[in-house]
Length: 348
Image 1 (cartoon, rainbow, N blue to C red):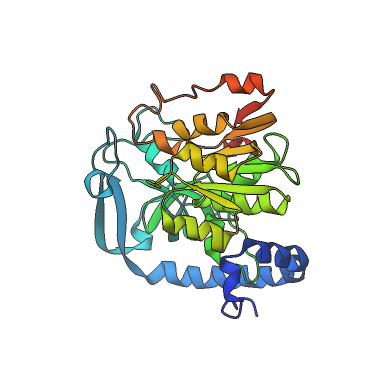
Image 2: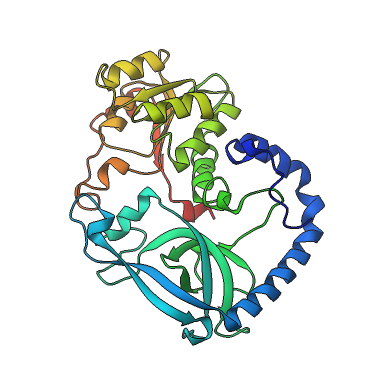
């Protein structure tokens, strides 16, 4: 009864709205079972860590990209066969995590820039990524920040066996019935939290009847944000590139309209005007560059713009030196509008 996940409706993984209703209604019923599940996991992990040999794999930084990132060129996969867990050296405050999954997010590109806001990696360093896993060994049970058997989620070294220390980028991972662990890298992780903060905490939230535009709408943050905006009663327009993403947003996610920036038959401005005939009241921007300028031209009185990312700038080589800023910023004054940015860590 503790570990059953197979009988959940198949659409729960793709429809966060069903998932939210279930959790809100049922989460307290399962609390006592979590304790039993944790004790069982701890016993299993202790047995595994004392006897199991692994092939340890990890990605290192081979070279730093000046512009476009290519994994085959800038990263290198290394392997070490027959590694016994007990042979990996740990300091007293460190823990060893058996990583179960990683998420490949756009912001990882910024870690390879010398002036990165989050973290700057150098040649030879182990790459980082958002992931989760289970603690299988600690340096000292008294000084370690994480307990054997517990799960952690956050920024991890890109390795199947990761040595970690206490960090605000790495947190204990929850456990909810009938909820796939992968959602902690999506709806319940940085993507979902970023979408929630952007829509509800940074400025005035979207209101019923308003027009909300989300760039990179088919991405991790975008897919969460457009559904949250729909639940507010707003008319939601997603910006994405290509027919596959357009169909996904319209038919699976449920946006009202899509602006396809890869469409060669109609200009971006023409599509945006058709999708937003009454202007734009709220814009969540994950892209920056010309996209931000085009939307600024369409904002209404008292519009709110929230800056979450700048994907269009990540491969330019100028992200931290001379990024392309908004040339239409005077529209903010003309429309009594506001533009705010945020970093998720400040809200955790």
